[in-house]
Image 1 (cartoon, helix red, strand yellow):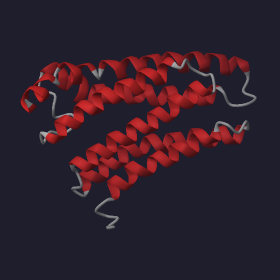
Image 2: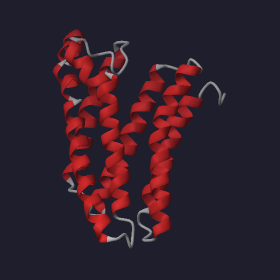
Image 3: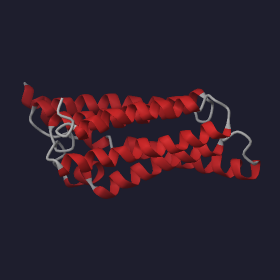
Image 4: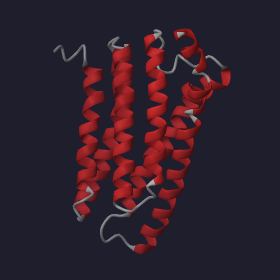
Length: 202
């Protein structure tokens, strides 16, 4: 494999393993383990921007790259939602909503790919493009999600003073709700505009 030609895809896949190590550390009840978990979580989410940069810099943009990027996003996000629910930090409704939305939208987008469209290129309405593909919506969703995950980990650092832990837990939950609402809202245009894909297959 030519690493340079596949550097973006390698980063997309590698971030999944970084996330796995990060959440694995959450089951080790030591301050150092949690600090490393936060650092690795930050790296895992930063790698999402890195793969996009590499794809543009080295001309590696492709349908495969788009699929791997979205796949990486979905798996990393699910890893944290499921782990936090398992640890009792959040309600199980968070991973249920996130994973359900991912199955629905990604299956629809797989149809769009067979039509030669990019995952976000299937949106043709102005409002659909804004909600799904605009830099503002992508950035706001990403910031809320990453902040929620990192703050929740911080809030449960073993031995953390309650005067710091309690407000951090509340902040993390609020951000988690904001993130999950964005998750649902950004899936609406995909569902609303998918009719044309199935009509064309008839």
